[in-house]
Image 1 (tube, rainbow, N blue to C red):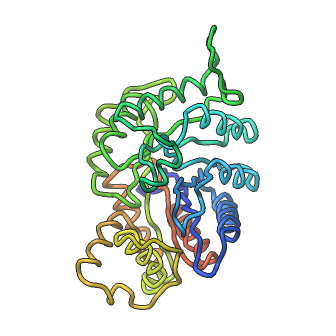
Image 2: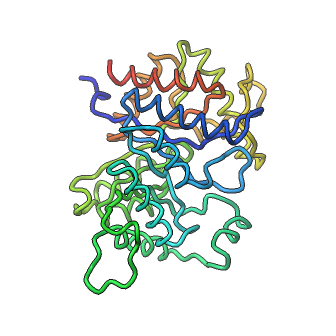
Image 3: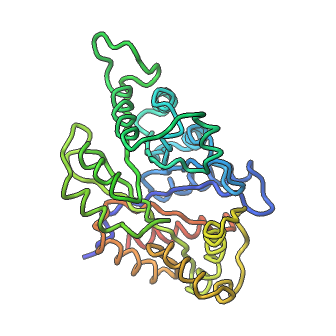
Length: 333
C-alpha cells in the first residue's frame, strides 16, 4: 500500500530574494512557481509574513496572496501565516474578506502568534502594544466572529469580510497552538520546516484534545517539509547548499539574500554548525526521486499528516520547479 497516495501536496513560499536579483524578480518567481504547482495538482500555495529581512519579500502578505491568486485559477492561496500580534483583527478580516470576494472559495487564512521579526520592527508595526498570552486566542476568536455571519445588533462589522467564512488555520511550532487549534476545532499546521523539535508531541496533543466544530469534524494536519529534489543525491545535496547557507545565516544572525549553491559547503563548517543545521532540517527531504520517496514515506509513517507543505529554497528558479515536479511524481507512484 502506498502511504503517500492520500496525502495532499502544497507549498509555502518565503519569497526569497536571490543574490543578484531584485524584489520584483522574487515576486515574479513566486507567481511562476505557484502556476507550476497548480499545474502539478498542488492543493494550496501559502506565503509567510516576515519583516525587516533583506532576503525575504513577503512582508505585505495579503498583497502577495492577491498577486498569486490573480495569476492562478484553481489552487488555494493564503497566508502561512499572518502574524496576528502585528495586526488588528479587523484589518486582517477586511483584507482577507476582500480577497475572498475577489477569489471565492480559494483563500486561506493561516495565523501565527510570533511577531515574525525583531523587537524594533514589532514596535513599528503595533507601536506600544504589549502582548500577553491571552491576546492570541482572543484575537483568533474575534477574527472568527468578524468573518462569520453578521449577528443582530452587531456594531462592528468587517466590510468586506462578514459572511465570507474564510477558513482559519492555526500555525505553530509549540504545544500552545496545538492545544488552541484542538480546543477550537480548527485545522493545524506545524512549522516543522524550521522548528521540528516538538512535531510529534504537538500532533499527538492536537489529535487527543481535538473537539469537532462547525469548521472541522476531524483533526487535520499539515506539516512543513523542506524539500530539495534532483535526479541524483549528489546534485540535490549541492543545490541544498543554498538552504544550508540560509540556515547558517539565521543561526548566526547574519541574514541575507538566497545564495548560489557552493560545492562541498557543509564540509567547510565546524561540526557544531553542521549539527545545528541538521537539527533545523530534521524534517527535510533531500535527494533523488528514490530518496524523496523514502523520506516522504518515513514522514507519513511518523506523523500521519494529511498534507505536506513543501519549502524548496533552490537558487535556480527552473531547478526549483523541477524539484517540486519530482515530489509530485513521487506522490503518484
